[in-house]
Length: 137
Image 1: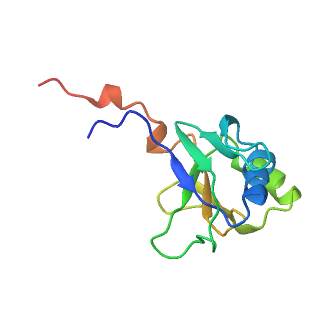
Image 2: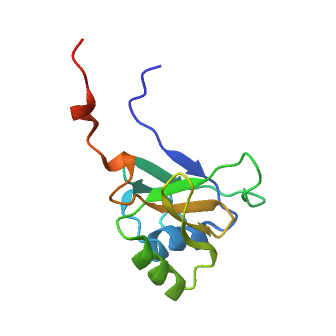
Image 3: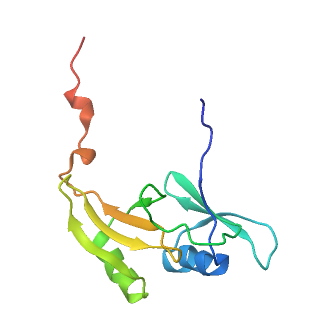
């Protein structure tokens, strides 16, 4: 399979509430807007991916086992924690260092979709330049 583009699709129970959460509270930039002006679908930039909030679900997707979770890497987790808490976003779990070395905070969108907000510490292996570790064959 040659994937040329991709995006995550969510169908919220209350599209207006979810659009406001992703656009106004999280502050995601809009890539594309489509559909009727009074109830548009929005596609947001998510770093190297896209998130589409469109349509309507009868019940929340929520965060049950095996369901969708969003993983969002940020530059400054402490600043995002302060900003989101001040905006009234419920913090499911405060920032902490995980056993695998990443700093994570957990929040949820209005339909209960778990969102992991992550900062990669400067000394984490994901930040190391592995090019120097190569050996000649």
